[in-house]
Length: 464
Image: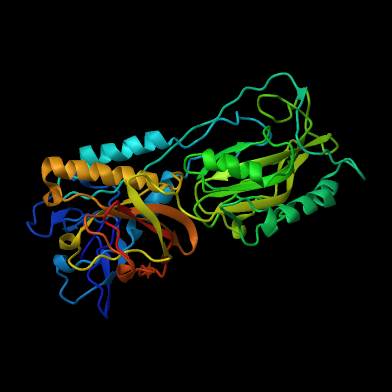
């Protein structure tokens, strides 16, 4: 029985499927059978150029594609499905959407591209290739917490029309024809911001989504329901791939986008009398009641990973007895990946990823890197890692000193849910002829599929 920690072993694709169960404790090199240091056990690993078998106390079942003779030199390159759960867990504690009202400064962004890029470079120079036979999984996590202390109650500021006709009620807010008309008009082709598309099925909803790739939001900068302003702001945010805009009375909009970047615009119904710090009613001074007066906020929430209409399930919440709600919720996505200095691209690979020829190590495959779900789809991170790999190889002779000249950035999903940003790196450029991986399954029947796949080539190394 072959065992692995978080990464199944794959061999060059042939006609047969082999299912292998895993349950052991030690890590061995295929070539030398020398035990790896015990400190490596329990880590999250991905495919590395040097073949190895990883064994842990955890019993796993994996789907193997390959020859009956499972030679390590025939190992094929596949999606890093064994690291999917680790990537999901890495983002589990992150903020998944903006606060109700204005509980946090709008300038606070939970994703720091510079910090993440520096961590990536550190992994390359200190760990990733320090041992040619050690695996190179990097699950990058970002965590910024927001805290506030209640103070004396006040009347909040707001940027949307208060709903008092026929009454200041939840039903009147949710069914306000002005909100519906604004959202519907904003989704018309002539009104969609340049470089963006409306998320299918995500127009004029009364619910919003939550996702750990949430970046930040704006409200005070909006003087009306205006996706163009949201798009302009998204374009200035590192890692922003889309937005959600809506009007709300007491609740926040958050959403995901199917494309490179997501933004959500929404009307939000919130209590009019609140603590200015927490943006919530105070139980002793200004309690939230069913009959408490409401205010309307228009917000844009920004996300780094895809938004989809099926996840618009957040319909509201209670603040005391006051019902926070939203209306006119639209989501927009960027329609292309960003361009990068010193790289040719992005070249769209659709919903397929590169599969280097076997043996992959001898054909330019370097490594793969998976990020936590609170790190956005941002190919610039892949570029930083690729360049760091090149510098390390040149200095230490790793991989024969060959440079990283091509990477494939993509998102992959488990059963169509919860995308994980991933980069695969190469010293040999590949094009359409090697777009052979359109998905795979494990032996539990889970389906892993790539999407938003793009290729980036160091200038002068592009291949069609």
